Amino acid sequence: MTPELSARVCSAILEQSADAIIYADREGIIRLWNLAAERLFGFDAGQAVGQSLDLIIPERLRAPHWAGYHRAIAAGQTRYAGKPTLTKALHGSGETRYVEMSFAVVSDPAEAVVGSVAIARAANPPVR
Image 1 (tube, rainbow, N blue to C red):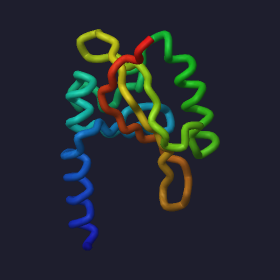
Image 2: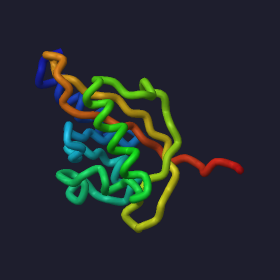
Image 3: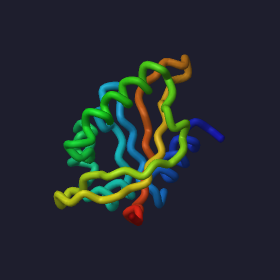
Image 4: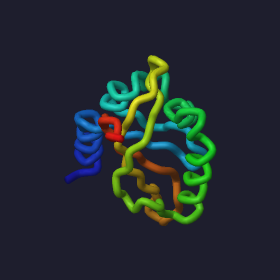
């Protein structure tokens, strides 16, 4: 596959994925936001790209999120090792919704950490 074809295929996969895909840089600024993320979180890419991940993190969860985020960036791996976790997220409507998310640290070809990726989908609230 040529680099050009590879880039087109990767772009198509990203946009046609049924799951939300969000890439944030080392500082937690959203750099990539696919169509499924628009549907799940209620913000279009123009509203999300360039914003802090705080856009979708409920205020009471921000401190633990950022502590974990910075630990993962420094360590080069997440605590969950790609396993999905149930959490709450903010929707553009102002509502809080349950989502299932998996996270990974992203490294460049030289193995330097450049950010993180989250894959998310809607989830039902836990039964209590």
